[in-house]
Length: 590
DNA sequence: GCCGTTTTCGGCCCGACTGTTTTCAGTCG
View 1 (tube, rainbow, N blue to C red):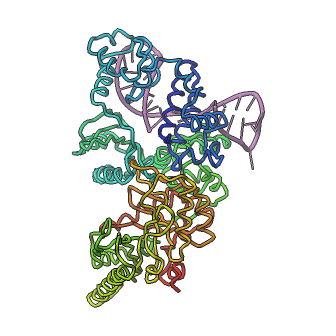
View 2: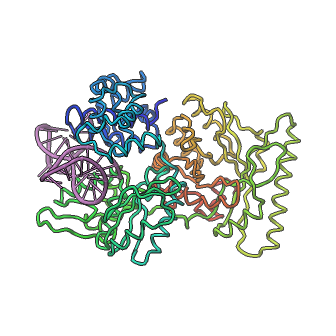
View 3: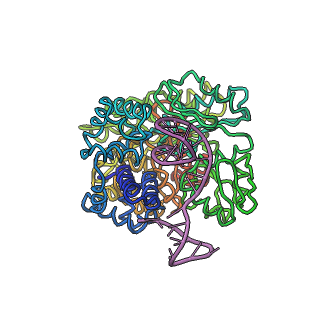
């Protein structure tokens, strides 16, 4: 299976060829744009192909779409192969080095006939050590050093890090930055600020009118391992944790422009620029320039920046270069859901010990209730995994489930006695496996005592698309099954989501009033944002749950809310923003 | 190669930093 990341890589290789051999920067850029767009998709390009929507990816036109179709059919693209043969293959290995682009890579590979991608890096190292590389004009000491270090460290950063990994790193640095007296403000930029599920680079912006002093202070952050580059307005450092971070300075006058510019996304900015050109305005991180008068409008806030272009404020989560500008022009940017709208968490695992259960929670009900009160929740729903009941009779199973319910109710009563106020209501549910054939891993009569069931795929991820679609719809057809848990089953950077006809599932959920979960566990964030968007557009209700296996994890709710916002969710799209009263009818309890 | 509310032809973002240059090219975001 070809991943989006691999497609992006292929497109970039071809782009490099066009740049080197044809000097065709525009064609190269077109390929790079397509690469970026594909890479940033959260749905697989293959799914889009099957829906006939490849060309709906901004930057993917009929030509590239056709190449991708060939790729999925035959596993290769003849056109790409032909183009790549025009340069020595070793060039592509060199492109992976930071600071080495097509020009340098080709120069080396061409001059020294590096025809084997696999051995190219070690050959280049020999060339440096033997002093042969310095014979090429333009290859001074520092550039060689940079290349050598890069080859030796073999630091291949193929994967983007999880948002949840980047967040604490950035927050630590931001707290330090805000403690510098001359710093007026500090914010994250890029994919981090747009709350993308995975983050490429960590970029931070600092607002000050004392650039020199502040940059000097920035470089004294104790967590810095080494300074990679530093200038008046931009520095790049590597932290002891290994993370590379860019810090950009802005004056208060250009703060809004800089935030906007570097928050991106690239596609959003490209579209914003072409829109501005119609008004004879050109955009940069320093402000908005009137091309007729040459005057530069300085935007102190992002709100003013967008306002100057005649647009309402667009939240960073929506800035993906999709339909946000069209909506903004019509003043139809929705009021997105916020963490404070959330009134409860319906996917929580307690420490109730089934005789044989998988993935037991660690916290007792008391801790979960404490945490829920702390979060201001009106209700919580316990949804432990269905136990593995092999070899037990139905009545035996029933007794065990009854024992759990009794215990939870008893504990809840005790809690009520101890704590008098603001006690969240308790719903007793279960998270039930969807078997390969769509049967639930629990007999129907045993579900009667549950308030609700979350049904989830936990096995047989590799089934064919039609089989997965059928099993999910069959499982959801059960009257107690109101929530589809972590629908795609993806684990970020570990496992792709299952293949399924999501539009069919979404339509089923809409028709049958089933709720799709936005699982807030940072490694899941599932539904993914793009499917959320489709679900919401089709009128499906969602609920944001943490899937906590310990009370402290209930704080993950924020990750789910950010993901939902990226999927254009408003408060009304999210079932657990409802009051307990209204939620009961959604869960068919009344 | 992509794109389109002036365009289906003729555009395509642009500024900061580094290194090897004595005035600029390459890379990055």
